[in-house]
Amino acid sequence: MHDVLTATLEEIRIHVTESGSVFLNRNGAPPCSFRTAFEGAVRKALIPDFTLHDLRHTFASQPVMSAVDLATVQNVMGHKHGNLTLRYSHLSSEHKRSAVGKLEQCGATSHPFAQHGSQL
Image (cartoon, rainbow, N blue to C red):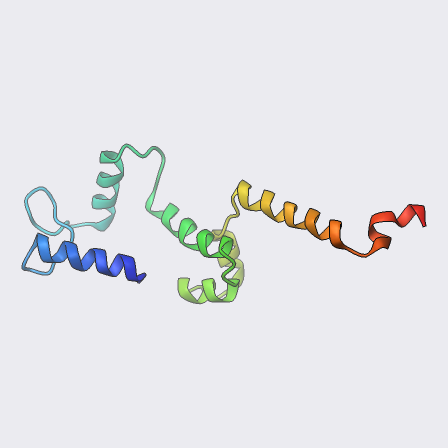
């Protein structure tokens, strides 16, 4: 787990319950189903069209867009094959635009033949 999440959960645990449960339902008991609790939280937060499965896509996409190599993301996610990691990791439009911008920067500093090929 990420250090920020660990610290946050430890803080919540201290203030929520002595039983060790972090998440509680309206009656103060641990939820019977994580899926039900998640779906209720999404409804309460008024987030449209968001599922538990979307978290896997986010978990795969964010590190890839932060230049974490696919093999590491694959290992952290527990995927046996890299093609599954590729299926979950999506690049944002902004990330793709940035990549194209880097190509343009490369073109500006590349060999003169690349810049003036037809004129030489």
